[in-house]
Amino acid sequence: PSILSDLAAQVRGDIFVVCGTNGKTTTNNMLCAALEAEGKKVVCNHTGSNMLNGVVAAFVLAAGWNGKLDADCASIEIDEASTRRVFPHFKPDYMVLTNLFRDQLDRYGEIDITMNLLREVMQTAPDMKVIVNGDDALSAFLAMDAGNPYITYGISEKVVEDKDSHEIREGRFCKCCGERLIYSFYHYRQLGDYRCPKCGFKRPEINFDATDVKVDDQIAFTVEDKRITANYKGFYNIYNLIAVYGALNVLGEKTDDFAKLLTGYKPQIGRM
Image (cartoon, rainbow, N blue to C red):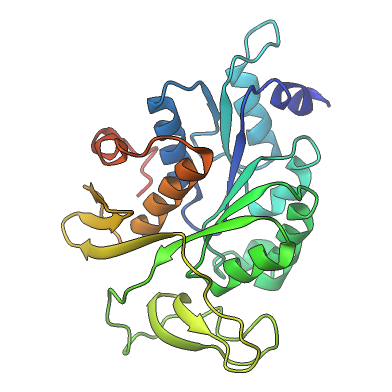
């Protein structure tokens, strides 16, 4: 019963966890690849097995037959509901929070249930730093409300035309006061530039901001004067990439070779 606690305690450096509705596996595996490119030994649940048994298995498979773990750090994807079962065994140093969408009503019920659960577990690790998608009003509010230190990533310029979109907008109402949020623009779903006209809640200042975004046969953007190009498709992958970029910066890792790393990165089991 104590095997996860025992093995996690043997990690020499930091433990990252990746949570959120969409993008967990892609973001987590990219983060692991980036850390390994810096010569680190990383514990990672590559296949996206993200409930308690999958997290335990990732650490067990990384250990030797003698029960000893030779790992510099860990990058672990965790299902949102499973955080309540995993966090008692170890307290992560960092959490990447990708987004909160209503994709899993069959599993969790209303999105407020997921937010309340995550807030509860985040407060059990008050020193854990959160790298959060600032374009998502729900994720940003959760990071602020939980009280953990946090930094943000996002896209501050309008990229796509959304006026005729009929997408579901989860974050239409302010979590602070209930007033309908005003958006300058949407990227997709509820992601965009928002503010509350009543209480002042608004999109936070973005620490890692993607600009000059191009989405065509490949995706490209600029962050901190670095041009990042990747042979991936899908606007959403810009968020996955900039989340990893932000996480590496927070950890103090070099990001000069980040674009080069992406050219050799292979997604797992059909993801992306």
